[in-house]
Length: 256
Image 1 (tube, rainbow, N blue to C red):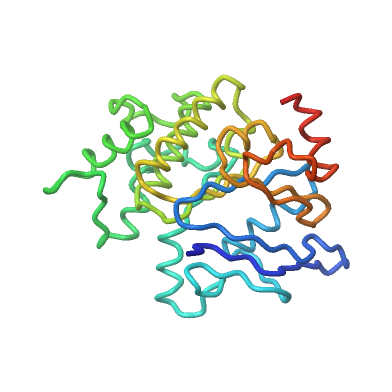
Image 2: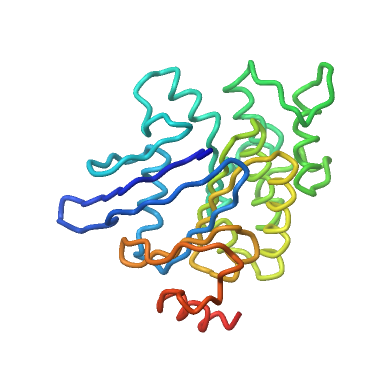
């Protein structure tokens, strides 16, 4: 069953710039899908449409068979709970004036009726919940009292991931989530996402300009160029002869 479905979506801005042209794909429950393409390929625009931050006139985007953006208030709330975002710049995503523990619990405070499965049955303090989330992303739970400027870039991104998974979304959208990190740190973050995906059984949409990162994480790979989806294949078919010339160029540049 499709969790997210994008059908023939086009987006044209007021200056007649066609940011997206008839893009179609789907993400199934528990699937990890990667979108790769250079700057200007339409990845960011597509992300904004999926999150409901921008409107579109042609095509249809649906989540659990409900249109995006949702029209009913109850549907909006459900959608916001079930799709969470991890951005590229973790420094801007965290409030520098708040301890990590408080930032971690923001989603849970917005959905007070949600009981996370990663906590054993019982009653827990907010601090205990924050400590558990830090442990889930491989951080020392003593960091709960630290501030963002006391953490490295990789640690801050782990905190952002922990915050995003705190309400166990059905879909985690990662927009260039490893782009600003050192190569060695990128590998650790990708491995963390793999582990969390299996543990929480969530779907992931991983958006990147780096085809190496995409191939290390994703089951299905979509390639975008100039607003068009030019390739769509399973990881096992990465080197198949029918791959688009642009996909082959990305692979050649990455020397995979």
